[in-house]
Length: 110
Image 1 (tube, rainbow, N blue to C red):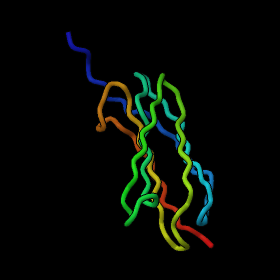
Image 2: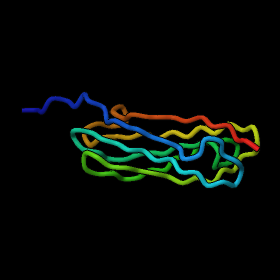
Image 3: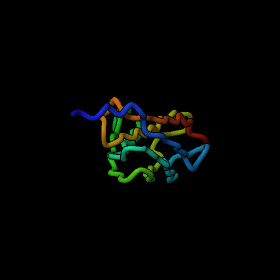
Image 4: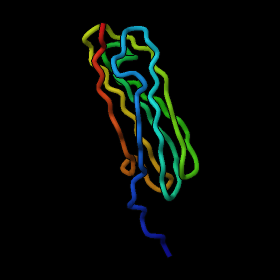
């Protein structure tokens, strides 16, 4: 007998520790995550670390039903640039379609 599919998405509450980043500043994106069936991984995505605005993907393993993942970034873009930081979390019973994401768009100041 096959188990019913997991239809409950993982929950995520993410925050960036700096509201107005400046070039060469270290910022941290942290996500508190939960899921009733078990957590698998967090994926961090940004558009400021690689040439020509290409997206960088960083995967971090998480476990249990309540965990935290974080990623540090050094701001590389000049004043007026917009950086998009995204974190996606997946549980153990689904693939990417089961992911939950939270995004932050920040403009570089000064």
